[in-house]
Length: 547
Ligand SMILES: O=C(O)[C@H](O)COP(=O)(O)O
Ligand SMILES: [Mn+2]
Ligand SMILES: [Mn+2]
Image (cartoon, rainbow, N blue to C red; front, side, top):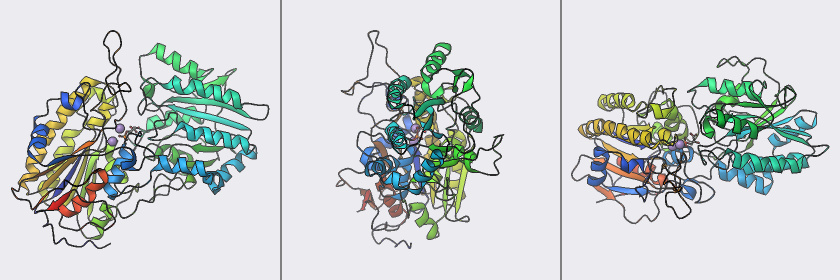
Protein backbone atom coordinates (compact mmCIF):
# COMPACT_ATOMS: atom_id res chain seq x y z
CA UNK A 1 0.00 0.00 0.00
CA UNK A 2 2.79 2.41 -0.81
CA UNK A 3 1.78 5.85 -2.08
CA UNK A 4 3.97 7.28 -4.85
CA UNK A 5 5.27 10.81 -4.41
CA UNK A 6 3.74 12.95 -7.11
CA UNK A 7 5.93 14.53 -9.74
CA UNK A 8 3.05 16.78 -10.75
CA UNK A 9 1.93 18.18 -7.44
CA UNK A 10 4.08 19.59 -4.69
CA UNK A 11 2.87 18.82 -1.20
CA UNK A 12 0.86 21.52 0.52
CA UNK A 13 3.30 23.12 3.01
CA UNK A 14 0.72 23.04 5.81
CA UNK A 15 -2.09 20.71 6.84
CA UNK A 16 -4.86 19.65 4.49
CA UNK A 17 -8.27 19.85 6.15
CA UNK A 18 -11.50 18.40 4.76
CA UNK A 19 -14.55 20.13 6.22
CA UNK A 20 -17.80 18.22 5.72
CA UNK A 21 -20.86 20.39 6.24
CA UNK A 22 -23.28 17.53 6.75
CA UNK A 23 -26.54 18.08 4.88
CA UNK A 24 -25.58 21.30 3.09
CA UNK A 25 -26.45 20.98 -0.60
CA UNK A 26 -26.85 23.42 -3.47
CA UNK A 27 -30.49 23.87 -4.35
CA UNK A 28 -31.62 25.32 -7.68
CA UNK A 29 -34.25 27.47 -5.93
CA UNK A 30 -34.37 30.01 -3.10
CA UNK A 31 -37.75 29.06 -1.70
CA UNK A 32 -37.29 26.94 1.42
CA UNK A 33 -33.50 26.91 1.12
CA UNK A 34 -32.11 27.54 4.60
CA UNK A 35 -28.58 27.61 3.22
CA UNK A 36 -29.28 30.55 0.93
CA UNK A 37 -31.61 32.26 3.39
CA UNK A 38 -29.05 32.23 6.17
CA UNK A 39 -26.66 35.15 6.44
CA UNK A 40 -23.34 33.39 5.87
CA UNK A 41 -20.78 36.04 4.91
CA UNK A 42 -17.80 33.71 5.33
CA UNK A 43 -19.16 30.87 3.23
CA UNK A 44 -20.30 33.36 0.59
CA UNK A 45 -16.86 34.92 0.46
CA UNK A 46 -15.11 31.56 0.18
CA UNK A 47 -17.44 30.39 -2.58
CA UNK A 48 -16.97 33.62 -4.51
CA UNK A 49 -13.19 33.89 -4.21
CA UNK A 50 -11.84 30.36 -4.35
CA UNK A 51 -12.08 27.57 -6.92
CA UNK A 52 -15.45 25.91 -6.52
CA UNK A 53 -17.46 23.20 -8.20
CA UNK A 54 -20.58 21.16 -7.43
CA UNK A 55 -20.29 17.43 -6.76
CA UNK A 56 -22.90 14.74 -7.26
CA UNK A 57 -23.84 13.22 -3.93
CA UNK A 58 -26.87 11.03 -4.64
CA UNK A 59 -28.01 8.02 -6.61
CA UNK A 60 -25.55 6.02 -8.67
CA UNK A 61 -22.78 8.52 -7.89
CA UNK A 62 -22.70 7.07 -4.36
CA UNK A 63 -23.66 3.44 -5.10
CA UNK A 64 -27.43 3.68 -4.64
CA UNK A 65 -29.74 1.63 -6.88
CA UNK A 66 -30.98 4.60 -8.95
CA UNK A 67 -30.69 8.34 -9.40
CA UNK A 68 -34.08 8.70 -7.71
CA UNK A 69 -32.36 7.76 -4.45
CA UNK A 70 -31.15 10.66 -2.32
CA UNK A 71 -27.72 10.54 -0.77
CA UNK A 72 -27.10 9.85 2.88
CA UNK A 73 -24.27 10.04 5.36
CA UNK A 74 -23.19 6.44 5.07
CA UNK A 75 -22.88 6.29 1.29
CA UNK A 76 -21.53 9.85 1.16
CA UNK A 77 -18.77 9.34 3.70
CA UNK A 78 -17.96 5.91 2.26
CA UNK A 79 -17.43 7.52 -1.16
CA UNK A 80 -15.37 10.39 0.23
CA UNK A 81 -13.18 8.09 2.30
CA UNK A 82 -12.75 5.29 -0.24
CA UNK A 83 -12.24 7.38 -3.37
CA UNK A 84 -14.36 4.92 -5.32
CA UNK A 85 -18.03 4.05 -5.56
CA UNK A 86 -19.16 0.72 -4.13
CA UNK A 87 -22.57 -0.82 -4.65
CA UNK A 88 -24.23 -0.04 -1.34
CA UNK A 89 -26.52 -1.93 1.05
CA UNK A 90 -29.71 -0.73 -0.60
CA UNK A 91 -28.55 -2.15 -3.91
CA UNK A 92 -26.88 -5.30 -2.60
CA UNK A 93 -29.93 -6.38 -0.61
CA UNK A 94 -32.31 -5.73 -3.51
CA UNK A 95 -30.06 -7.78 -5.80
CA UNK A 96 -29.68 -10.58 -3.29
CA UNK A 97 -33.46 -10.84 -3.00
CA UNK A 98 -34.03 -10.63 -6.76
CA UNK A 99 -31.49 -13.36 -7.47
CA UNK A 100 -32.69 -15.52 -4.59
CA UNK A 101 -29.18 -15.64 -3.13
CA UNK A 102 -30.46 -14.34 0.18
CA UNK A 103 -32.59 -17.46 0.70
CA UNK A 104 -29.64 -19.73 -0.09
CA UNK A 105 -27.43 -18.17 2.57
CA UNK A 106 -26.71 -19.94 5.84
CA UNK A 107 -28.02 -17.06 7.93
CA UNK A 108 -31.47 -17.11 6.36
CA UNK A 109 -31.62 -20.88 6.59
CA UNK A 110 -30.76 -20.79 10.30
CA UNK A 111 -33.41 -18.16 10.88
CA UNK A 112 -36.05 -20.23 9.09
CA UNK A 113 -34.94 -23.45 10.78
CA UNK A 114 -35.33 -21.79 14.19
CA UNK A 115 -38.82 -20.61 13.33
CA UNK A 116 -39.80 -24.01 12.02
CA UNK A 117 -38.78 -25.62 15.28
CA UNK A 118 -41.62 -23.73 16.89
CA UNK A 119 -40.14 -20.29 17.40
CA UNK A 120 -41.67 -17.04 16.25
CA UNK A 121 -39.90 -15.17 13.46
CA UNK A 122 -39.58 -11.48 14.33
CA UNK A 123 -38.70 -8.73 11.89
CA UNK A 124 -37.52 -5.45 13.37
CA UNK A 125 -36.56 -2.34 11.45
CA UNK A 126 -37.30 1.00 9.88
CA UNK A 127 -40.70 0.79 8.22
CA UNK A 128 -40.53 2.92 5.06
CA UNK A 129 -39.15 3.01 1.56
CA UNK A 130 -36.55 5.66 2.44
CA UNK A 131 -33.78 3.31 1.29
CA UNK A 132 -31.34 4.97 3.70
CA UNK A 133 -31.47 2.37 6.48
CA UNK A 134 -33.97 -0.08 5.02
CA UNK A 135 -36.64 -0.67 2.40
CA UNK A 136 -40.12 -1.97 3.14
CA UNK A 137 -39.99 -4.11 -0.05
CA UNK A 138 -37.18 -6.15 1.50
CA UNK A 139 -39.42 -6.83 4.49
CA UNK A 140 -42.29 -7.90 2.25
CA UNK A 141 -40.06 -10.25 0.28
CA UNK A 142 -38.84 -11.90 3.49
CA UNK A 143 -42.35 -12.35 4.87
CA UNK A 144 -43.49 -13.90 1.58
CA UNK A 145 -40.50 -16.22 1.56
CA UNK A 146 -40.95 -17.21 5.21
CA UNK A 147 -44.51 -18.22 4.47
CA UNK A 148 -43.42 -20.13 1.38
CA UNK A 149 -40.84 -22.02 3.42
CA UNK A 150 -43.42 -23.07 5.98
CA UNK A 151 -42.80 -20.65 8.85
CA UNK A 152 -46.03 -20.42 10.79
CA UNK A 153 -45.70 -17.39 13.07
CA UNK A 154 -44.27 -13.97 12.20
CA UNK A 155 -44.27 -10.78 14.28
CA UNK A 156 -43.26 -7.31 13.10
CA UNK A 157 -41.69 -4.55 15.17
CA UNK A 158 -41.95 -1.40 13.12
CA UNK A 159 -39.99 1.80 13.55
CA UNK A 160 -41.88 4.73 12.08
CA UNK A 161 -39.79 6.95 9.87
CA UNK A 162 -40.81 10.54 9.05
CA UNK A 163 -37.14 11.42 8.59
CA UNK A 164 -36.09 9.81 5.31
CA UNK A 165 -39.67 10.07 4.00
CA UNK A 166 -42.57 12.50 4.51
CA UNK A 167 -42.75 13.68 8.11
CA UNK A 168 -46.28 12.37 8.69
CA UNK A 169 -46.44 9.50 6.23
CA UNK A 170 -46.57 6.57 8.70
CA UNK A 171 -50.11 5.53 7.82
CA UNK A 172 -49.24 5.52 4.11
CA UNK A 173 -47.05 2.57 4.98
CA UNK A 174 -48.99 0.96 7.82
CA UNK A 175 -52.47 0.82 6.25
CA UNK A 176 -51.54 -0.87 2.95
CA UNK A 177 -49.23 -3.20 4.84
CA UNK A 178 -52.02 -4.30 7.15
CA UNK A 179 -54.12 -5.04 4.07
CA UNK A 180 -51.26 -7.06 2.63
CA UNK A 181 -50.90 -8.99 5.92
CA UNK A 182 -54.66 -9.68 5.90
CA UNK A 183 -54.19 -11.28 2.50
CA UNK A 184 -51.36 -13.49 3.75
CA UNK A 185 -52.91 -14.64 7.01
CA UNK A 186 -54.28 -18.16 6.98
CA UNK A 187 -54.96 -21.11 9.31
CA UNK A 188 -51.29 -22.01 9.23
CA UNK A 189 -49.75 -18.57 8.83
CA UNK A 190 -50.11 -16.15 11.72
CA UNK A 191 -48.60 -12.74 11.01
CA UNK A 192 -49.10 -9.42 12.82
CA UNK A 193 -47.50 -6.16 13.83
CA UNK A 194 -46.48 -6.56 17.48
CA UNK A 195 -44.84 -3.30 18.47
CA UNK A 196 -43.37 -0.08 17.19
CA UNK A 197 -42.69 3.58 17.69
CA UNK A 198 -40.92 6.61 16.24
CA UNK A 199 -37.37 5.93 15.17
CA UNK A 200 -36.03 8.88 17.16
CA UNK A 201 -37.70 7.78 20.40
CA UNK A 202 -36.91 4.08 20.40
CA UNK A 203 -34.29 1.60 19.24
CA UNK A 204 -32.40 3.50 16.52
CA UNK A 205 -29.90 5.52 18.53
CA UNK A 206 -26.40 5.79 17.08
CA UNK A 207 -22.86 6.18 18.36
CA UNK A 208 -24.08 5.69 21.93
CA UNK A 209 -25.58 9.18 21.96
CA UNK A 210 -28.64 8.10 23.97
CA UNK A 211 -28.84 4.49 25.14
CA UNK A 212 -32.15 5.20 26.88
CA UNK A 213 -33.76 5.14 23.43
CA UNK A 214 -32.51 1.63 22.85
CA UNK A 215 -33.67 0.52 26.27
CA UNK A 216 -37.17 1.82 25.54
CA UNK A 217 -37.13 -0.12 22.28
CA UNK A 218 -35.92 -3.26 24.03
CA UNK A 219 -38.69 -3.07 26.62
CA UNK A 220 -41.30 -2.59 23.92
CA UNK A 221 -40.14 -5.13 21.32
CA UNK A 222 -38.63 -7.82 23.52
CA UNK A 223 -40.49 -7.60 26.82
CA UNK A 224 -43.77 -6.36 25.41
CA UNK A 225 -43.82 -3.60 28.02
CA UNK A 226 -45.34 -0.33 26.91
CA UNK A 227 -48.63 1.41 26.29
CA UNK A 228 -51.01 -1.02 24.66
CA UNK A 229 -53.10 -0.56 21.54
CA UNK A 230 -55.23 -2.81 19.37
CA UNK A 231 -53.35 -1.87 16.20
CA UNK A 232 -50.49 0.25 14.91
CA UNK A 233 -53.02 2.44 13.14
CA UNK A 234 -54.79 3.11 16.42
CA UNK A 235 -51.51 3.89 18.18
CA UNK A 236 -50.44 6.39 15.54
CA UNK A 237 -53.79 8.17 15.41
CA UNK A 238 -54.06 8.30 19.21
CA UNK A 239 -50.56 9.68 19.71
CA UNK A 240 -51.07 12.26 16.97
CA UNK A 241 -54.25 13.47 18.65
CA UNK A 242 -52.56 13.65 22.02
CA UNK A 243 -49.45 15.49 20.99
CA UNK A 244 -48.38 17.32 17.92
CA UNK A 245 -45.30 15.32 17.01
CA UNK A 246 -44.10 14.05 13.65
CA UNK A 247 -43.60 10.35 12.95
CA UNK A 248 -39.95 10.07 13.93
CA UNK A 249 -40.85 11.33 17.43
CA UNK A 250 -43.99 9.24 18.10
CA UNK A 251 -43.78 7.30 21.38
CA UNK A 252 -43.45 3.54 21.43
CA UNK A 253 -46.43 1.17 21.46
CA UNK A 254 -47.22 -2.48 22.09
CA UNK A 255 -49.98 -4.26 20.19
CA UNK A 256 -52.02 -6.44 22.51
CA UNK A 257 -55.09 -8.59 22.68
CA UNK A 258 -57.00 -8.96 25.96
CA UNK A 259 -54.13 -7.19 27.70
CA UNK A 260 -51.54 -9.63 26.38
CA UNK A 261 -48.76 -8.38 24.11
CA UNK A 262 -48.96 -10.00 20.68
CA UNK A 263 -45.31 -10.67 20.15
CA UNK A 264 -42.73 -10.46 22.91
CA UNK A 265 -39.39 -12.00 21.96
CA UNK A 266 -38.63 -15.17 23.91
CA UNK A 267 -36.28 -18.16 24.01
CA UNK A 268 -36.33 -20.16 20.79
CA UNK A 269 -37.39 -17.25 18.54
CA UNK A 270 -35.56 -15.85 15.54
CA UNK A 271 -35.00 -12.12 15.08
CA UNK A 272 -34.06 -10.37 11.84
CA UNK A 273 -33.07 -6.72 11.96
CA UNK A 274 -33.94 -5.71 8.41
CA UNK A 275 -32.00 -2.43 8.38
CA UNK A 276 -28.99 -2.67 6.12
CA UNK A 277 -27.24 0.47 7.38
CA UNK A 278 -25.14 0.04 10.46
CA UNK A 279 -24.89 3.22 12.51
CA UNK A 280 -28.36 2.97 14.03
CA UNK A 281 -28.39 -0.83 13.99
CA UNK A 282 -25.31 -1.46 16.11
CA UNK A 283 -26.62 -0.71 19.60
CA UNK A 284 -29.74 -2.85 19.38
CA UNK A 285 -27.66 -5.62 17.75
CA UNK A 286 -25.27 -5.47 20.68
CA UNK A 287 -28.20 -5.76 23.08
CA UNK A 288 -29.33 -8.95 21.31
CA UNK A 289 -25.91 -10.56 20.96
CA UNK A 290 -23.55 -9.51 23.77
CA UNK A 291 -23.27 -11.89 26.69
CA UNK A 292 -21.81 -9.29 29.03
CA UNK A 293 -23.89 -6.27 28.26
CA UNK A 294 -23.86 -3.28 30.58
CA UNK A 295 -25.31 -0.38 28.56
CA UNK A 296 -28.72 -0.77 30.25
CA UNK A 297 -30.56 -3.25 32.44
CA UNK A 298 -31.63 -5.66 29.75
CA UNK A 299 -33.16 -8.31 32.02
CA UNK A 300 -32.85 -11.94 30.99
CA UNK A 301 -31.45 -12.23 27.45
CA UNK A 302 -33.76 -14.42 25.38
CA UNK A 303 -31.88 -17.15 23.51
CA UNK A 304 -32.69 -16.24 19.93
CA UNK A 305 -31.24 -16.74 16.47
CA UNK A 306 -30.33 -13.15 15.67
CA UNK A 307 -29.46 -11.98 12.16
CA UNK A 308 -28.72 -8.52 10.80
CA UNK A 309 -29.55 -7.70 7.21
CA UNK A 310 -25.82 -7.01 6.90
CA UNK A 311 -22.77 -7.13 9.05
CA UNK A 312 -22.74 -3.63 10.46
CA UNK A 313 -19.16 -3.35 11.73
CA UNK A 314 -16.31 -4.96 9.84
CA UNK A 315 -13.90 -4.60 12.76
CA UNK A 316 -16.00 -6.02 15.59
CA UNK A 317 -17.82 -8.41 13.23
CA UNK A 318 -21.21 -7.34 14.53
CA UNK A 319 -23.53 -9.10 14.29
CA UNK A 320 -21.89 -12.47 13.67
CA UNK A 321 -24.89 -13.71 11.67
CA UNK A 322 -26.05 -11.59 8.73
CA UNK A 323 -28.08 -12.13 5.58
CA UNK A 324 -26.22 -10.16 2.92
CA UNK A 325 -22.51 -9.57 2.53
CA UNK A 326 -21.77 -5.84 3.04
CA UNK A 327 -19.93 -3.83 0.36
CA UNK A 328 -16.25 -4.82 0.39
CA UNK A 329 -14.86 -1.32 0.93
CA UNK A 330 -11.09 -1.65 1.07
CA UNK A 331 -7.98 0.51 0.75
CA UNK A 332 -9.62 3.71 1.96
CA UNK A 333 -7.69 6.96 1.95
CA UNK A 334 -7.37 6.71 5.74
CA UNK A 335 -5.71 3.33 5.45
CA UNK A 336 -3.31 4.56 2.76
CA UNK A 337 -2.33 7.56 4.86
CA UNK A 338 -1.83 5.44 7.96
CA UNK A 339 0.27 2.88 6.11
CA UNK A 340 2.45 5.64 4.65
CA UNK A 341 3.21 7.22 7.98
CA UNK A 342 0.98 10.28 7.55
CA UNK A 343 -0.65 11.64 10.69
CA UNK A 344 -4.42 12.10 10.74
CA UNK A 345 -6.95 13.81 12.96
CA UNK A 346 -10.72 13.29 12.81
CA UNK A 347 -13.31 15.17 14.83
CA UNK A 348 -17.05 15.56 15.14
CA UNK A 349 -19.73 15.58 17.80
CA UNK A 350 -21.37 12.33 18.91
CA UNK A 351 -24.18 12.43 16.34
CA UNK A 352 -21.68 12.38 13.49
CA UNK A 353 -18.61 10.96 15.20
CA UNK A 354 -18.86 7.61 13.43
CA UNK A 355 -19.39 9.37 10.13
CA UNK A 356 -15.82 10.77 10.07
CA UNK A 357 -14.33 7.60 11.55
CA UNK A 358 -16.41 4.46 10.95
CA UNK A 359 -18.16 5.40 7.69
CA UNK A 360 -15.06 7.25 6.47
CA UNK A 361 -13.00 4.10 6.95
CA UNK A 362 -15.40 1.82 5.06
CA UNK A 363 -17.63 0.83 8.02
CA UNK A 364 -14.84 -0.14 10.39
CA UNK A 365 -14.95 1.19 13.90
CA UNK A 366 -11.24 0.80 14.72
CA UNK A 367 -8.16 2.78 13.75
CA UNK A 368 -5.55 1.70 11.22
CA UNK A 369 -2.73 3.04 13.36
CA UNK A 370 -3.07 3.95 17.03
CA UNK A 371 -0.08 6.27 17.07
CA UNK A 372 -0.68 8.14 13.80
CA UNK A 373 -4.40 8.74 14.21
CA UNK A 374 -6.30 10.89 16.69
CA UNK A 375 -10.09 10.67 16.79
CA UNK A 376 -11.98 13.22 18.88
CA UNK A 377 -15.66 13.07 19.86
CA UNK A 378 -17.34 16.14 21.34
CA UNK A 379 -20.43 14.91 23.26
CA UNK A 380 -23.66 15.99 21.55
CA UNK A 381 -26.57 17.54 23.41
CA UNK A 382 -29.46 15.17 24.04
CA UNK A 383 -32.23 17.62 23.19
CA UNK A 384 -34.33 18.24 20.09
CA UNK A 385 -31.87 20.01 17.83
CA UNK A 386 -34.28 22.75 16.80
CA UNK A 387 -33.79 23.97 20.38
CA UNK A 388 -29.97 24.08 19.99
CA UNK A 389 -29.34 24.58 16.27
CA UNK A 390 -25.75 25.60 16.88
CA UNK A 391 -25.19 22.15 18.35
CA UNK A 392 -21.49 21.68 19.19
CA UNK A 393 -19.99 23.50 16.23
CA UNK A 394 -18.14 26.00 18.43
CA UNK A 395 -16.63 23.31 20.67
CA UNK A 396 -15.60 21.26 17.64
CA UNK A 397 -13.93 24.33 16.18
CA UNK A 398 -12.08 25.05 19.44
CA UNK A 399 -10.54 21.59 19.38
CA UNK A 400 -9.88 21.61 15.64
CA UNK A 401 -8.11 24.96 15.80
CA UNK A 402 -5.85 23.59 18.53
CA UNK A 403 -5.12 20.54 16.41
CA UNK A 404 -4.27 22.62 13.34
CA UNK A 405 -2.05 24.93 15.37
CA UNK A 406 -0.28 22.03 17.06
CA UNK A 407 1.36 21.17 13.75
CA UNK A 408 1.05 17.49 14.63
CA UNK A 409 -1.27 16.49 11.82
CA UNK A 410 -0.79 16.44 8.05
CA UNK A 411 -4.39 15.56 7.29
CA UNK A 412 -7.44 16.58 9.30
CA UNK A 413 -11.13 16.04 8.77
CA UNK A 414 -14.24 17.32 10.48
CA UNK A 415 -17.95 16.82 10.18
CA UNK A 416 -20.25 19.62 11.29
CA UNK A 417 -23.68 18.11 11.93
CA UNK A 418 -25.78 21.29 11.89
CA UNK A 419 -27.17 21.41 8.33
CA UNK A 420 -28.28 17.82 8.59
CA UNK A 421 -29.47 17.27 12.16
CA UNK A 422 -31.38 20.55 12.24
CA UNK A 423 -32.54 19.99 8.65
CA UNK A 424 -34.15 16.73 9.78
CA UNK A 425 -36.34 18.58 12.29
CA UNK A 426 -38.18 20.29 9.44
CA UNK A 427 -37.89 23.60 11.30
CA UNK A 428 -36.91 26.23 8.75
CA UNK A 429 -35.99 29.00 11.21
CA UNK A 430 -33.80 26.64 13.20
CA UNK A 431 -32.06 25.46 10.04
CA UNK A 432 -31.29 29.07 9.12
CA UNK A 433 -29.83 29.62 12.58
CA UNK A 434 -27.85 26.40 12.24
CA UNK A 435 -26.21 27.67 9.06
CA UNK A 436 -25.44 31.02 10.64
CA UNK A 437 -23.82 29.36 13.63
CA UNK A 438 -21.76 27.25 11.30
CA UNK A 439 -20.61 30.27 9.33
CA UNK A 440 -19.24 31.91 12.48
CA UNK A 441 -17.11 28.83 13.00
CA UNK A 442 -15.82 28.82 9.43
CA UNK A 443 -14.84 32.43 9.98
CA UNK A 444 -12.72 31.31 12.95
CA UNK A 445 -11.32 28.15 11.41
CA UNK A 446 -10.31 29.13 7.87
CA UNK A 447 -7.87 31.90 8.86
CA UNK A 448 -6.13 29.47 11.23
CA UNK A 449 -5.72 26.90 8.44
CA UNK A 450 -4.38 29.56 6.09
CA UNK A 451 -2.00 30.90 8.75
CA UNK A 452 -0.58 27.38 9.00
CA UNK A 453 -0.02 27.42 5.21
CA UNK A 454 -2.72 24.78 4.93
CA UNK A 455 -5.45 24.00 2.44
CA UNK A 456 -9.11 23.58 3.30
CA UNK A 457 -11.66 21.64 1.30
CA UNK A 458 -15.21 22.65 2.13
CA UNK A 459 -17.76 20.12 1.02
CA UNK A 460 -20.76 18.07 2.17
CA UNK A 461 -22.01 14.49 2.07
CA UNK A 462 -25.52 15.23 0.69
CA UNK A 463 -28.16 17.94 0.86
CA UNK A 464 -30.77 18.54 3.55
CA UNK A 465 -31.01 22.14 4.84
CA UNK A 466 -31.06 23.31 1.22
CA UNK A 467 -34.67 22.08 0.89
CA UNK A 468 -36.81 22.56 3.96
CA UNK A 469 -40.21 22.45 2.18
CA UNK A 470 -41.82 19.60 0.29
CA UNK A 471 -41.75 19.97 -3.48
CA UNK A 472 -44.32 18.92 -6.06
CA UNK A 473 -43.47 16.69 -9.02
CA UNK A 474 -42.31 19.70 -11.04
CA UNK A 475 -39.87 20.71 -8.31
CA UNK A 476 -41.82 23.69 -7.01
CA UNK A 477 -42.58 24.22 -3.34
CA UNK A 478 -46.03 22.83 -2.48
CA UNK A 479 -48.41 25.36 -0.92
CA UNK A 480 -51.97 24.80 0.25
CA UNK A 481 -54.84 27.22 -0.38
CA UNK A 482 -53.66 29.40 2.52
CA UNK A 483 -50.14 29.48 1.10
CA UNK A 484 -48.77 27.18 3.80
CA UNK A 485 -45.81 24.97 3.01
CA UNK A 486 -45.23 21.44 4.26
CA UNK A 487 -42.01 20.78 6.14
CA UNK A 488 -39.54 18.46 4.49
CA UNK A 489 -37.37 16.51 6.91
CA UNK A 490 -35.45 14.25 4.53
CA UNK A 491 -32.27 14.65 2.50
CA UNK A 492 -32.28 16.12 -1.00
CA UNK A 493 -31.10 15.05 -4.44
CA UNK A 494 -29.03 18.21 -4.84
CA UNK A 495 -25.30 18.33 -5.47
CA UNK A 496 -22.94 19.61 -2.81
CA UNK A 497 -20.26 22.28 -2.84
CA UNK A 498 -16.58 21.61 -3.24
CA UNK A 499 -14.51 24.70 -2.41
CA UNK A 500 -10.73 24.59 -2.42
CA UNK A 501 -9.30 27.22 -0.11
CA UNK A 502 -5.60 27.91 -0.01
CA UNK A 503 -3.52 30.95 0.88
CA UNK A 504 -1.05 30.57 -1.96
CA UNK A 505 -1.43 32.82 -4.97
CA UNK A 506 -0.06 30.17 -7.28
CA UNK A 507 -0.72 26.84 -5.65
CA UNK A 508 0.45 24.96 -8.77
CA UNK A 509 -2.91 23.38 -9.53
CA UNK A 510 -6.35 24.29 -10.75
CA UNK A 511 -9.73 22.60 -10.80
CA UNK A 512 -10.21 20.30 -13.77
CA UNK A 513 -12.94 21.39 -16.13
CA UNK A 514 -13.14 18.12 -18.06
CA UNK A 515 -14.77 15.88 -15.45
CA UNK A 516 -18.33 15.56 -16.66
CA UNK A 517 -20.11 14.23 -13.61
CA UNK A 518 -17.73 14.55 -10.71
CA UNK A 519 -18.96 13.30 -7.38
CA UNK A 520 -17.92 12.68 -3.80
CA UNK A 521 -15.69 9.78 -4.81
CA UNK A 522 -13.37 12.25 -6.58
CA UNK A 523 -12.37 13.92 -3.31
CA UNK A 524 -9.96 11.27 -1.98
CA UNK A 525 -7.60 11.45 -4.98
CA UNK A 526 -7.69 15.23 -4.68
CA UNK A 527 -6.64 15.07 -1.03
CA UNK A 528 -3.78 12.72 -1.84
CA UNK A 529 -2.58 15.08 -4.59
CA UNK A 530 -2.72 18.04 -2.21
CA UNK A 531 -0.56 16.04 0.19
CA UNK A 532 1.94 15.53 -2.65
CA UNK A 533 1.08 11.94 -3.60
CA UNK A 534 -0.33 10.27 -6.65
CA UNK A 535 -3.62 8.55 -5.94
CA UNK A 536 -3.85 4.76 -6.35
CA UNK A 537 -4.63 3.85 -9.97
CA UNK A 538 -8.15 2.63 -9.35
CA UNK A 539 -9.25 5.67 -7.36
CA UNK A 540 -11.69 7.96 -9.14
CA UNK A 541 -10.04 10.96 -10.76
CA UNK A 542 -8.67 13.88 -8.82
CA UNK A 543 -10.55 17.15 -9.12
CA UNK A 544 -7.34 19.11 -9.69
CA UNK A 545 -4.67 19.22 -12.39
CA UNK A 546 -1.24 20.76 -12.18
CA UNK A 547 -0.48 24.02 -13.97
O1 LIG B 1 -30.12 8.34 10.31
C1 LIG B 1 -30.54 9.46 10.03
O2 LIG B 1 -30.52 10.40 10.83
C2 LIG B 1 -31.16 9.67 8.67
O3 LIG B 1 -31.85 8.52 8.28
C3 LIG B 1 -30.13 9.92 7.64
O4 LIG B 1 -29.25 10.96 8.01
P1 LIG B 1 -27.69 10.84 7.76
O5 LIG B 1 -27.53 9.95 6.56
O6 LIG B 1 -27.27 12.25 7.45
O7 LIG B 1 -27.08 10.31 8.97
MN1 LIG C 1 -25.13 13.27 6.42
MN1 LIG D 1 -29.23 13.13 7.67
